Every structure is written in structure tokens, then in C-alpha cells.
Image 1 (cartoon, rainbow, N blue to C red):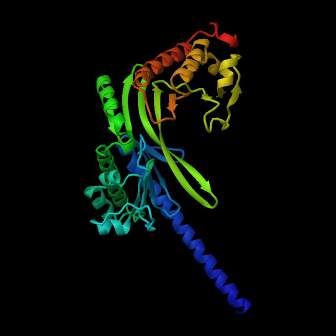
Image 2 (image 1 turned 90 degrees about the vertical axis):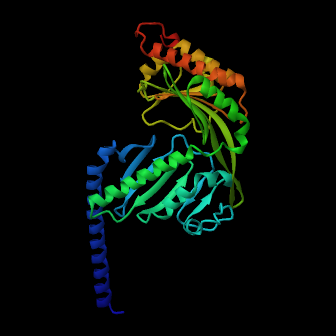
Length: 375
């Protein structure tokens, strides 16, 4: 091909690319403008990273994709515990859960889960019907932690975007409702009666997917749950996964500390990650410093909160009940074993409440009061 022809082709290609880019920018701008008009009516606020709100009690983020589509991500709270991967791009994996009585769904979706029986409960007739009749939703993906999809065909119509957005929200609400009826994992069935009885006694909400209970105490919201943990195992070029449950208990403060504070056992995986803007703090309490790593942005505020009484209580819980973590939002305990002794469950909530009260007393103490080794 002669140089002149090459120049002409290059010019055409570059010009076409510029027009496509310009068109996508205009499309993204339109969709962003539509979202700004629609989402605040549903309690969403525009923040860094998109629009943030809640759907059926789950945190939800809406952004605009590079192709000018609305990207919706719902983070399940709490996460599911099915070892789930469901998406609309079937690859015929050997581990796929079959749906022989629903060929329309089986032909368009792939579902992988640890327990097929629980997957059938979640993807019941109604959920499958909704998924197979949603031509406006693309790139659907459901995992234990989230639901994600994009909405297409909306750049030219605010009304169309609004209608399709509401349909997605309705689907998430229905999915969350069905989730409540999924049975407890087989490995945890022996624990269900004890947990249900304790939740009833406390007057707390109880759920089976995952096994959990949630309730309010004076210091904040308490959640106790069995969390499914996935660990990768590398063998040559092959990667396999092992699953196990860990019991987690959290107490979220009514009034967050706002100190940029993290106190975590040195034995916890991932605790060595550096926090942006945070400093490592030594308390002068040898046993505490050997057990925990402390980081904070507000060093003086962290020193005030970590009073001698708070440090002693953190050590007591860590050694007698579960490894414990403290941060701005609250307290969390983690037990790596499936088995949960009844006496441990009874201790959990009072232990968290007492520690939260000590923290509140320390954070409001006068600056000239005794602060242990900090003084």
C-alpha cells in the first residue's frame, strides 16, 4: 500500500476514534446528570467514587462506567456464606450448579456454590424469572459479598434510567427477602438451635445466611456471626480453595472515635499494613505492646483512649475470649474455630459492652487525669 493511502486510512481511523471518544464523554455526562436528578430522591448522596446509599439495608454505590452505563454495586451486609459465584457469562465449569428444569436460566447464567441445595433455595423460581427477563441489565455478577450489574440503553432518557434503576432496586429487595429463607449451612446446623435461642432471649434479629444475630445495646449495635473464609492453595500452576468458618463479633460505636486509630493483635493476618497518615504508637505497657500494634493519626487522642483500664480489658478479652481489634468504628472479635462453646457466647456481649464503656470514659476524661504510662 502506498504512503498516501496509509495516511488517508490513519486519518480516518484517528478521526473515527476521536468521534467515538467524544460521543462516550457526552453519554457519560448525560447519565451522570440523570443520576444526579434521580438518586437523591432515594436517599443517595454524591460522594467520592459515585453516589452512595442503601438498598434493602445493604450499602449501595452507583457510578458511571467508561461506556456510559450506570454501574450498580450492592454490598451484602452481612455477606452470604454460600461460596457463591453467579454471572451471566457461562463457561460450563465442572463445578456449576445445574438447573435442568429451567433451561432459559441455565443457558444464560452460571451458578457455582459449595452447597447446591442452598443455591437452589436462593435462586428460586421468582429470582430466576426476574434474572432471565431483565434485558436492560448487563454484566450481572453475584458473589457472597456483593451484587453488581450495569444498566444499558439509558443515555438519552432520564425517565428510562429511572424506571430501570427502580427495577434493579426492586430485584435487590426481593433477592434480600429470599435470602432470609435460605437454610443454615450444613456445617453449622448443630449450632443453629443455640444461636436462635440466645437471639430470642436477647430480643435480637436472627438469620441463617450467614448464621448471625444482631441487636442493640447501650454502647451501639452488636453483631455476632459465622463468616465463611476462603483460602487459596497453590499447587504448581493450579489454584484450589479451602473454606472454613470463623466466628466474628462486632460492636459499632454510636459515636465513632475519629482518631484514625487501629489496635490489632500482631498475630492477625494483614495487621501489618500501613495506615495512610498514621503513626505507630508504643504505650510503655510491655505486655500490651508485645501483643498489639497501635496506629493512629491523632496520637494524643489515641493515648487518651488507651487508658490503663482499657489496655487491661483489651488484654483480658484477647487472652480469655477471642483475639480483639479496636478501631474508630468499634470493636471486633474473631474466633478461628468452627466450634463455639455456650459459655463463650454468654461472655461475648457483656465483655464488649464493658470495654466500650471504659473507652467512652477514657475519651471524655480530663486531660490532666491519670493516663498510665503516657503521663
